[in-house]
Image 1 (cartoon, helix red, strand yellow):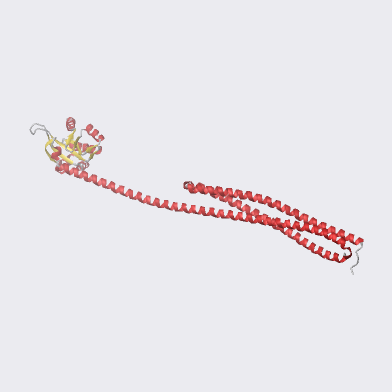
Image 2 (cartoon, helix red, strand yellow):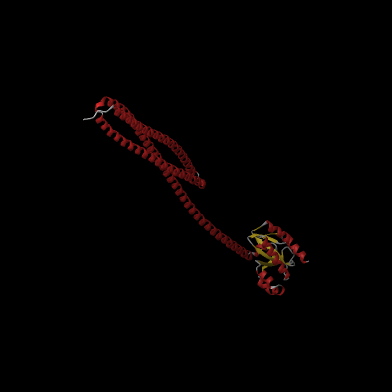
Length: 393
């Protein structure tokens, strides 16, 4: 049989219950405040994360623009590459900071959730104790049902508020988890963009390597062409020298064989003389080096000046240097060798013969009294003869 509660016992029990429910409500209010602080901190973190993601996206936009410039302007690759690397380092640093901040936030969130769970565990224990006390109280308050119903209604109202608060906490937690998933998706998109950018960079580097290889091949081909061209020019130069020598030799043979045709207009009874025919006299009157120099004379002719009456015209010798293109060296050789012949006692007149003569060589020939013969036409003959005769006198 349940003993009836006294008025003092009911009052004490009610006071104790009110105190316990006050503690429960205070704990729930602290839990709500902690959740509010969590939401504020999360909003701040989300704003910071969004700002960082915006900076990351801006950096990605700049990286994409730099990549486009890199592809469009391959010549500025070194500068664009340096910018890309600098931006990649900045992005990596920002990503590292983001990861560190996310780890820190996750650790703080886990700590807060652990505290919330511990509070809920304590609340569950308190609730269990309350229920046990309620069962005991129901047994004891059989005679005070009306008062207990009142108390129960108030308790149910408070429990309803508690449940509503827990529902709001659960909803806030669900929103937090949704935001965390959105943040994870944004992070995944960022990583995908980074991978795409890395692949584009790898393709650019591959294109640059291919371009470098093609450039190296082009340089090898160019070097080969240059070497071939140099060899060709050397062969052409040797060929020109040989052709020039052959042309000179043929011209010398032609003048020797057709001496009368070329020099018959200025001399008669002309004769081609070999150095060996007058070698004894030359060796008596000249040094060995001077004799050796005369052996290099292209053609030596003697005859009498045409236009003299009978055969009384003076005899002259022509020291002839033959070249297809007469230059100053030909004029100087003819002059030098004519002087040696005159030293040996032969009235030699320097003569140059060929197809053409340079203006400078012609000027020197006029000044030095050198006869010029071009394809059988002689010039400066009278002037040269008069100059050498006056020198001899």
